[in-house]
Image (tube, rainbow, N blue to C red; front, top):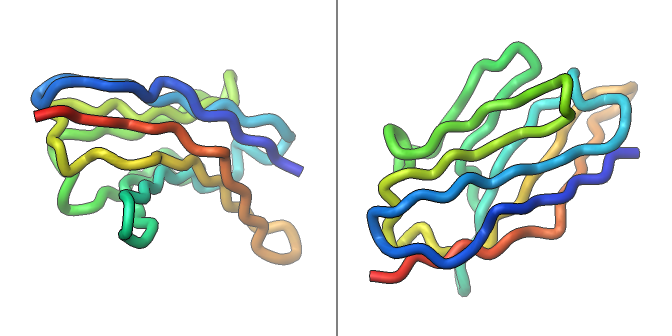
Length: 118
């Protein structure tokens, strides 16, 4: 069982920065692919960034060069540094943990609101 708790969301002006954190419980963090997703009102949830167990990363085109995902396995925490924020980045951001243990296991956090004002 994995529990995920996000923090760091809030209100920021366009051009500003925020850092989201996702603290994970459970002993599978180090082998998990950790992802950040977001969902804006009326839109589908979309992948923002992901980081593998070997720290390989993947980003949505819309955030490349502005967002950075990282992980600290000693702290069971994954981060999303968001710079040069735009109003279109406004959404609820969710942390996801995925790993394989006989079958694929998938866990979600409760989400944290990010609002970027113009």
